[in-house]
Amino acid sequence: MPISKVDICCGLNWGDEAKGKLVAHLVKNNHYDYVCRWAGGNNAGHTIYVDGKKYKTHLIPSGIFYNVKSIIGHDCVVNPESFMGELDYLREHGFDTSLIKISPKAHIVTESHINEDKEKYKDQGTTSNGIAPCYKDKYGRKGLRAENVDSLKDYLWNEVLDGNVLCEGAQGFWLDINYGNYPYVTSSTTLPYGACCLGFPPQKINRIYGASKIYDTRSGTDPLFPESLLKDPELMSIVKTGGEIGTTTGRIRKTNWLNLDKLIIASQISGVTDIIISKIDVLEKVGLYKLYHKNNLICFKNLKEMQTYISNTISGTCTFVSSITYSGQVEGI
Ligand code: IMP
Ligand code: MG
Image 1 (cartoon, rainbow, N blue to C red):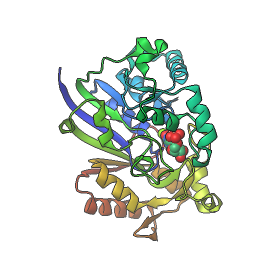
Image 2: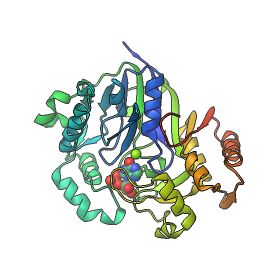
Image 3: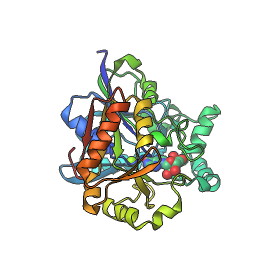
Image 4: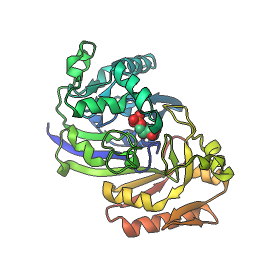
């Protein structure tokens, strides 16, 4: 069977945009033969609710929660120990782990990558999972691939996609190796074009879903998100109400009002067709509605006014966007 269509889900901010929830929604409401991760490793953290129960994964694509073949793609990096840990966790909770496969070309994160990350990349506030050193070895052509690791041989993928494919992004647009605030970025391609490395022509892309939050958060070090944000009482009330604590690192996420200019650039370059803006209930609970646009901080009287402003501005600037959806924090969109 040839590839029928490909949908892509990507993050439009700095990660943590509820992509996991979006992927779950898409898998529940569409037929997909595969859900694939195209880049990154266990630096990501995906939270999924299945029948009201909360689950977390870091590397394994969220399709697994809905019985769909789940592929860890060529440009991903795999820590075998943490992969096995996730398999055990999923098995214990009754999910069919035989659906999980790894590309033989995926690179392996070793103990020495993790040590190097902790020693040399501390100032960049990485997740300490060995991501940068692993990609450094990959691109320096000295890396170890999944096909070279005995313990992974039962999980290797035959590298052929067919039917309907959903590509699950990790991290977000502004953490991309090219587009982010280098060197405060991750080491992979987080933009939708990166998904094409999974093995389909770009012509097969059907919808590109972009996930954003209604306010900005940053879980690692980034001069664009100074420590002073943690002293702002209004922003801190968003942190508390929104539970803005990193899934992977347990760190408080530095939080700021939505930068609409950045969201527009991310949407335009990513070519998103549908935007899903989440956590609107957090602003409602806090009762504050603000965003930055053209370097001005704009305050709105209520959520409706803010949503109308966002939707109108995006519609006027992002040609490919045909729907903008707003959602709360809980399950469902
Ligand atoms: P690394 O990917 O562990 O090297 O981390 C590089 C930067 O990306 C750090 O600022 C991390 O906090 C950030 N980062 C990596 N993965 C994620 C993610 O899934 N969500 C949010 N931030 C992330
Ligand atoms: Mg995440």
